[in-house]
Length: 227
Image 1 (tube, rainbow, N blue to C red):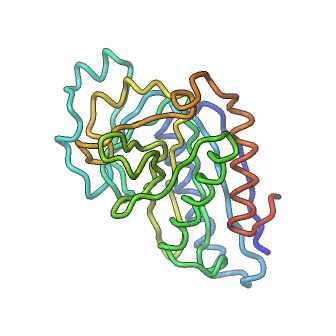
Image 2: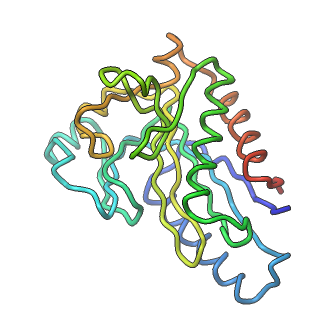
């Protein structure tokens, strides 16, 4: 069974966390050339970020609907980054997960990897009484997919893979300030809304409980042990 080093980074700057992921990814890739497959290393980071918008390499800049001056006024930053997907928002009250996994060690491809991330989120939301599912033609986790006028995203997913080692990951809206999504076309969509666990349940949810449940579901879905 694969071993995963888990770390809760608390509230941490986006760029610092991005650089940290890059270092971890390089470490795994280098280790793969030097160690036997039985000695593989993997990492899982949980973090919240100060207000930030990130644009994936295939995204369109016009999906950011505000100018730099407005970014400053709402205390948000903006980065063009190297993951797939379009634009998204990260901020306090949102649980961001960055698995830095060697997919060869897990014996899965990128499609199965994303599927397992989605399944872990869906299982977690179910434990809070929120029914969610995948949406055909779109990554992430959604609520009310059978109602086109009300379908809304509760978790975004965007990844990068180099030498079968992942970076970036998922962003689950727990107690997120959803007003920040008004300044973008989330993930490039103009006809779908966003939501949070707090909005669905009508009150803030304990982040520590969400982390604990999601971590357990990731362990079961990916079949790893924490170290």
